[in-house]
Amino acid sequence: MISLEPELTQLPDTGVLIARERREAVNIYPELRVLTWAGVMLISWGVGVYVAKHLDEIGPLAIAAVIGVAAAACYAWAYWKRSRTASLADDYVLLLAALLASADVGYIEHHYHLLGTSWPRHFLFLAILHAVTAYYFQSRLVLSLSVASLAAWMGIERRSVDAIFEAPVATAWRAFACSAIVIGWRVLDRKLRPATTFTTFFDHAAANLAFWGSLALAAHQETRFLGCAIGVVLAAAAMLYARRTREATFVIYAWVYGIIAVDTAVSEVIGDGILMAFYLLISTIAAIAGLFLSHARIRRAA
Image (tube, rainbow, N blue to C red):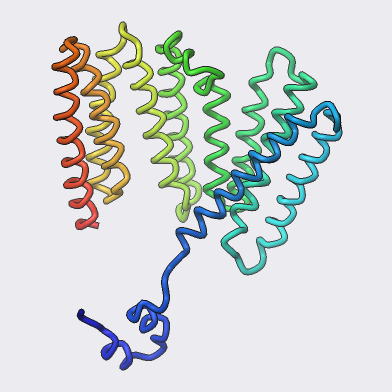
């Protein structure tokens, strides 16, 4: 096995590099991020389960107050740590604060009906709250909650998946409109803040929203071919964007969403079950091979 240890010992301050060369030091940062994120999700889930099981015992006012205090404590921790040395958990504590605030606002609206028939507007309030928080703390995690709340306010997220099939055109146009808003937000963000770190997130969010809109159209028979055509065009645009920016994730978007659109259209034309199964087998293998080749090419170019 080739070792670079003799060369590294001739350089100053290379203790960490030598340790990594000897396999004595292992980077576990990605694993810690996943575990921290999982911990935040478990806490949020646990709060929801506890509230659901003890609603009658605790009372709605006490539940709202406790969740609000917990959210405020997490926000206070994030503010206190803002001027100090950052740690891995800081951004996830802020994410927990935003999730608790969302749960508290949703619970209050659900129980007390403060907005009446205009209850979806609490999603707009959450979108603004999370956007302000994201910009203040420079957090892309919280920014993702802002975009999700914006999508919910515009009616993309429904209580049932059946809504996609009941009103596919309306759902699709809401998705396209939300994608356009995110793109406009991205342009404004880059213009006002040239050193922004949110651009990549905006690109991913806008792409996924647009693809989901095309799939919503493809899920309905009357608009199936239109949705598939839009999906193929978006896949081609994603591939061109990946080649221009060397962003490998957009290659995955292009192949995954693109093959779904193509398979949906071809399956509609074939009709026969056996031929359809054979075609899906061949197209899946071809898509996997194409994805790996394209992804490797982009990675090498990057």
